[in-house]
Length: 127
Image (cartoon, rainbow, N blue to C red; front, side, top):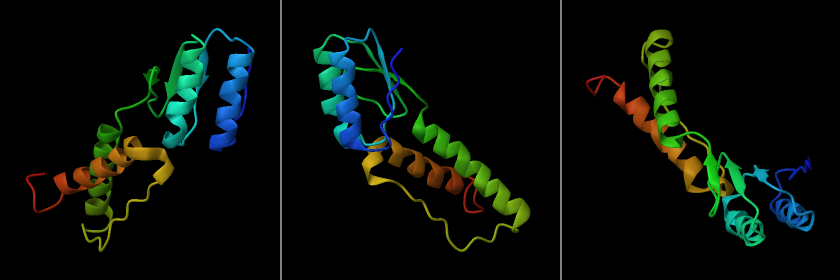
């Protein structure tokens, strides 16, 4: 078993992918947060004929292991709205969603889902 740490750094993730290829591993289970570098990493590993399992952010040529980000966000948003209603009498002046651009659209869908979940439970809706 070969374990390498990407240190949340895209270039380190690429070097680690190259090391997996160099060592001719049988399978790579990979986790890194920068979706912009995902195609390069996936291409290196796939090009070597090594199966790739991706955790959290989908990559080309890989089996994805993760959650439905929109649905997770939606459910979190519903819970947040419920909490606001029961603890703050439903009075919230702002809801702020923060994302990481490098995590890409998959992560953004979690934030989008959270806002939709909040909206589904507000007094202006059926919820």
